[in-house]
Image 1 (cartoon, rainbow, N blue to C red):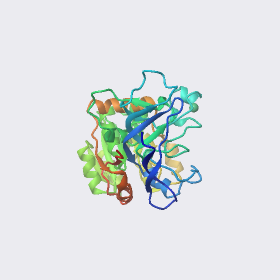
Image 2: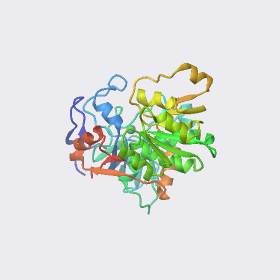
Image 3: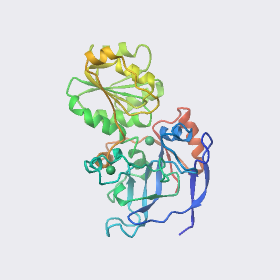
Image 4: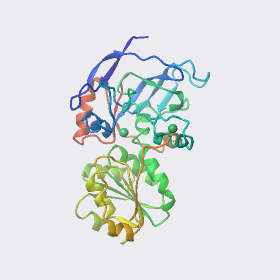
Length: 353
Ligand SMILES: [Zn+2]
Ligand SMILES: [Zn+2]
C-alpha cells in the first residue's frame, strides 16, 4: 500500500486549503480505514476555515476538514469483530463519534455525547482526502450490496440529508392534515428538508422560503406546494396561504438573525421553530408573542445513528432525490468559492478517488 495519500488541509485560517501528500493512516484497534468515495462540502467548513470557530473548536493545524463522508472499507483494525466488515464494503460514516457508554449515547443520541468528536472538526482528520481513519467500526453503516447508491450520493446524507430529517421527524406528530410546514433556506440541507416534509407530513402544506429565485424554483421541483421569497411581504403571503393560521413547524436551515426573526413572525399558535443552521450568533425573539402564543423554539443537532440508517433506507428505496455537483480533490478550492458565492445547487461533493 502507498505510504502517502493526497489530502486537502487547512494550514492557516482564511487561506485556501493546501492539496498535498500526507502520511497514510493505519487502522488501530477497532478502527477502520475508509477509502473516500465522496465527501460533501458543508457551510460549516466555511465557518471553520474562516477561523470563526477557533475558540469553540480549537484545532491543531494542519487539519483535513470534511465531515460528510462515504466510501469503501480499505483496512480493518485487529479488534474489529471478525466478519462484520470486509474490504470493499460500501459504507457511510456516521459523524457524531460519541463515547458509546454514557446515558446520552445509550439512548441513541451519540451526536450529543458530551465528549463527541467529529471528523475534521476535532483531533480527527476528515474526508477531504483519499483515505480517512475512522476510530471505531461502530461509526460505519454498511450499505447493502447490490444498491445503486453511489458514495457521492451517500456522503451528503450523513449531514445535509440527516439534519433536517431529525428536525422534521421530531415534530411530525404535529403535522396532521390541515397543518403547514415551512423550510427556510433551500441550500444543501433545505433541498432534503423539502423532500422529508413531503414524505413525513404528506397531508400538510409545504412552503419553501429563500432569498434566491433559482432556489425557490428548485424547491418547487422537489415538491414544495408554495415557494416564497424571504422579504418584507413573506408574512403576508404565509398568512394568505395558511388562511391566517400561520405555520405549525418551521425548520430554519440558515439560522441567521434575520431568518429567525422572520420565522418567528410566521408561527401558528403553539408552533415550533427548529433551528438547524448556524449562521448567526444569537436567537432573539419578541417576548410577548412568544409567551401568549406558546411558541416552541428549539435547536436540533445533526441526527443520530438510527436516523441515518432510516435516511439511507429511504435513499435505497429511491425516495430521495440527490442533487450533487462533484469536484476532484485538486479542485476543492473552486468548489469552496462556488459555495461561498451561493452558486451550488444542492450539495458540492469532493470525489478524491
Ligand atoms: Zn455540516
Ligand atoms: Zn457518550
